[in-house]
Image 1 (cartoon, helix red, strand yellow):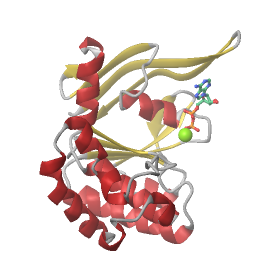
Image 2: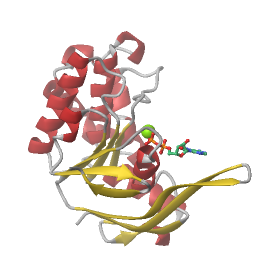
Image 3: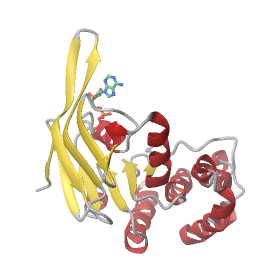
Image 4: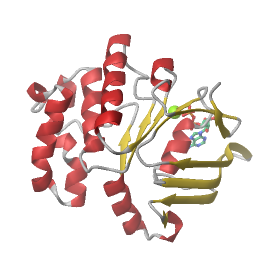
Length: 223
Ligand SMILES: Nc1ncnc2c1ncn2[C@@H]1O[C@H](COP(=O)(O)OP(=O)(O)O)[C@@H](O)[C@H]1O
Ligand SMILES: [Mg+2]
């Protein structure tokens, strides 16, 4: 098992009102498995991924990543764990506009301090993804689909154990969504990391070894 989340509660406070989003949610993620999570808008998919990916803290509950309870970690240790074990692909790609595609892919390596060792891998990933001729382009010079594929490479550069993708096809047209779908399929066969994808797209949901739905604050099996 690579990640274990136990009895997670998370609510947001809007003024005096408390909005419960995750209610006693537990999930175990096995090494190398792909899990897809569907759920209506506002059901808490992004909140869940942020908590599982250690970007946000639950009100209560435990997250254990690779046998380490993250509650026991200092902020700096947590940041190191996050940058070495976890990759993120956000819906809005979050590429830095002032860096080229190639430089963006190497940012997580920069954070860990191993850019030199990762340069060859970055080039391999551009080949793998069929974007070698876009390496020196800036995000503004790329299409939406290309930006997302660059974000996928950035998530993979440090060989993380888990990659989270939050509605990756949400803003893509059908053709680019299909390209990204094929890329995820290829990645889950070719690399060793677990892959957790939230989606509204049925074809993407079908990628899951386990297909779940987030509903009323908890995860259930997709029917
Ligand atoms: N920072 C926040 N402050 C207050 N409410 C929030 C915050 N983030 C999300 N929410 C609310 O929590 C619920 C779940 O949001 P979210 O996790 O973004 O759902 P999804 O990704 O499934 O659309 C929504 O009702 C949203 O409005
Ligand atoms: Mg969301």
